[in-house]
Structures are given as structure tokens and as C-alpha cells.
Image (cartoon, one colour):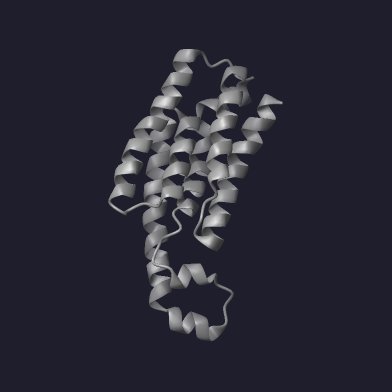
Amino acid sequence: MTQAIIFVVFPLCLAVAACSDFLTMLIPNRVSAILLASFFIVAPLVGLGMTEIAMHLAAGAIVFSACFALFAFNVMGGGDAKLLTASAVWFGLTFSLIEFLVYVSFLGGVLTLAILSLRAHTNSILASGLPVPDSLVMAKKIPYGIAIGIGAFMAYPSSPLMLAALGG
């Protein structure tokens, strides 16, 4: 049961968030809430002690602080900040968190450049009739949830909870 939660909940939540952000430019709050709630269910079941759980929460607090500053300066959306924070809790204060954040940063930059390029050709895209969501070509925001989701998929195999599930 615990392994199923680890193998399914985190990836599924990130996939839902990425798809939702791609299609609607919104990340549902329930995705971040499910990530946090399921962490609190899974952590004791895989044998994390109170100190280790506190370190995972500290990772979330550190990422939240940075995301809050970016949100305050209108650099990052609120849904992205909540998703990144909830995801950081699953990684904890480990190298996998750094790996995750580097992946997200790099992929976010590539995504931003790709979408800016796409928006530079909006008239051609609309005239061609390609099935591109209006939010991608018309909105001024970047659906960063896509980069968060892909970065999480890339870093998740080295996360403490995934390693615990594979080892136990």
C-alpha cells in the first residue's frame, strides 16, 4: 500500500498539475494539498522519524520562502509556488532537492524561450489552424507547472521516499 502511494500519488499529482497548467494556466489547489497530505501519511509508514520529517518540512519552508519572494515580485504564480513547495517536501533537504530545483530551473528557461518563440508567431499559428491552447498564445504568463512536473519526474527516482519504496 505504501509503495503504491509513493509510486502513484506524487507522479499523478505532478502530471495533473502540468496538464492543467498547460491547458488552463491554473494549477488546482487540491493538487498541492493532496501532495502535502499524502506525504504525512507516507512518511511514517516508510520509517521516517520526527527529525527526518522535520527536515522534509524545512525543505518545503525554504522553497516556500524563495517562492513567496518571487510571487511578491510577480515573477512566479501562486499555483506554481504552492506546487513547488509541496513537491520540495517530498524531496526533503537532500541532494535530490537540489537536483529537482536545477531541473526545474533549466526546464523553466527552455519552456519560457519556447513559449516566447511560439507567441512571436501567434498569427501564423492561429491562421494555420493548429490545435494550440489559446492560453499558450494569448496569455502573458508561462505555464511553469510543466517545468515543475517534468523536473520532478526526472529527480524523483533519487528522492528519499522513492529509494525507501524501492529498498523496502
